[in-house]
Image (cartoon, rainbow, N blue to C red; front, side, top):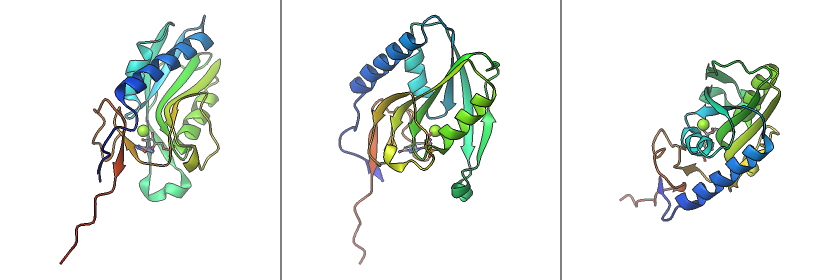
Length: 179
Ligand code: IMP
Ligand code: MG
């Protein structure tokens, strides 16, 4: 696999959208302290840019979720790390890199709802609505994308490409003729 010739979403376009999302969230949560929970590792770069544009009092926490590759259909997820800060009664914003099948988002939402926050909202940089298996939506979506594998700006393929400032698609390599 190799990177597409041109970025799918260039850095400047991402940054502009991150500004808009932060403005929207600041407006919607005005007057409240916000607990931002960034989902590791993918959302780290997005969350770092996003929180610096919030016009609110905010705290930053992290959650790390691992899905079992071998049991994909069961959708079994393990929470490797959860916020140290209590969730109950707080205004909580979950920040993810991408909504794909929706399994991660659904598990996160269920886990955090059970803690009875005052309000819980989900913000994802990217959404792939075509690949949804579990019916879950995000209150805040940066960009809706087609069913293509994307990397960069925090998103990885086998841990590569996370550091790229733009978002790219991964394209299959040309078949090399064997003799
Ligand atoms: P879901 O539980 O299927 O919605 O998966 C969400 C997770 O899968 C994301 O947090 C990503 O880590 C990963 N993922 C899904 N699609 C992509 C992609 O196109 N590029 C990189 N990671 C992806
Ligand atoms: Mg991820």
